Length: 251
Image (tube, rainbow, N blue to C red; front, side):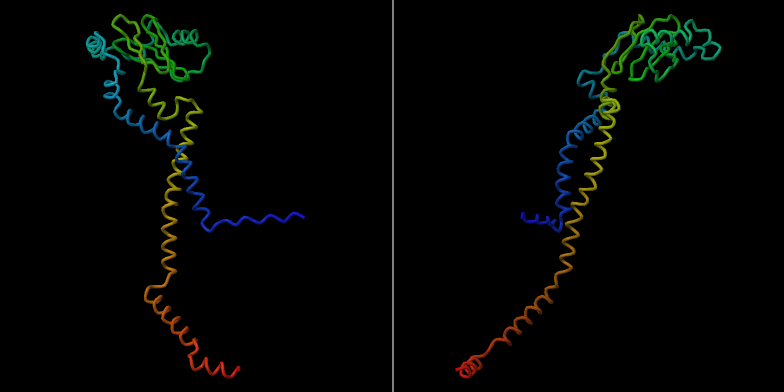
């Protein structure tokens, strides 16, 4: 017959030992994401100077000053609903342009904005792509989710990579869609676990040391106990005369 397996006995402080293992591996997993979140957070706080230093900020156009003055003049542009109804390109026509480009894709936002003295339809689909349509001429162009668009004095679009949005989505996890958001949410949970386990690893040994210190007798009591034990031992030890009489009696 095979001997029955000996049951495994857990050590007294097994939870403390296991928590150290969990804490170590959770820290290794979260380290990479901590680096990403930390660096992107710094970039978001100092986005403009960092991008300008790295040459990622688009250079101003030659006609930007003229655009600023025309934008200031557009403050007097009629904004009443009756005026907007008379625009050459209607909202339905702008949506038809978007349908031609994307099909029947789900939309996230549709807006009519006055920019640089001209009314523009800005239609955004889910995922971040946009179409800008002039309400005066019907001229339009599209831009990607990570593209920044500007209009030149002649009305043409000048596109550049939108590093600001890229860093923000990398920071929040949106760059990976729902999966990316779920990953960053999981990392947040890991960080919360690291906080709790770190507190436990610090507090548990402290409480154990205090409990052991309370269980140990004070030096005065320990010295008294040692003296008592020594005196008891001396009292019990036989004297030479007693040992001699005991030997004579047995002979």
